[in-house]
Amino acid sequence: MTGEKILLRLYMRTGDQHMLVPRYESVIQMARRKKLAGLTALRGIMGFGQRGMLKPSPMHLISDAPIIIECVDDGEKLLAFLHDIAEKLLHHGLATLERAAVVIYRPRERTARGEAQLLGRIKPLSTLPDIERGLPMHTNSDGVLLRVFIGESDVYEKKPLHEAILNKARELGLSGATVLQGVMGFGANSVMHTDRILAMSSDLPIVIELVDSREKIQLLLPQLDAMVTEGMITMEEVKVIAYRHAPA
Image (cartoon, rainbow, N blue to C red; front, side):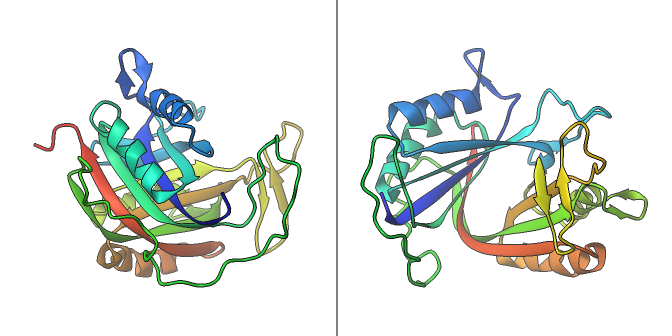
């Protein structure tokens, strides 16, 4: 399992259902049946997409939340998985494909351990499989995944910074964004933040993920430069796939 692999990321919503079951849960069960190497589901606290803004309540509990599903495996295996779930389980949303060079992979039953080494640099997107072959998606293109690492207590013009960034991204016409909240972390000032009940700090880590064309992301960067006074921003080149049950 080590070596050149592909990371598939699906952007979904918890409120979408298939036969009275949340679609994302059905996707996870399908991935398990297909024996994918592993999968992680990340629940967001805020986001927007083609169907509008998902906003939290004052208690940060929302019935329809953004969710990101990430899985790493061979490119052809992930394409077959996408083909199986495309028509029934992918309703509205976005998927991205990117390189995932696996340095360590240790299933529970394995005892022998090899030496971990970083893989070499390669041309972006050069290892991705050919997604044109029979995949029932509506659009695909090269794009950029931007991640903005900030704190929950950061503000901009008297609003939470993550909310201000989402509003600006939507104003500029980006296709979507997801806000993820961490449970523990530290930043450039090395102050530890945690969600433990007895902790004094409530400044939990926040990660905002935005996916779009390089041109759209470039429009947003000057705004982020002015809004983010403490934090970090990273970018990755990805293959972007849009899926819609009813494109009209």
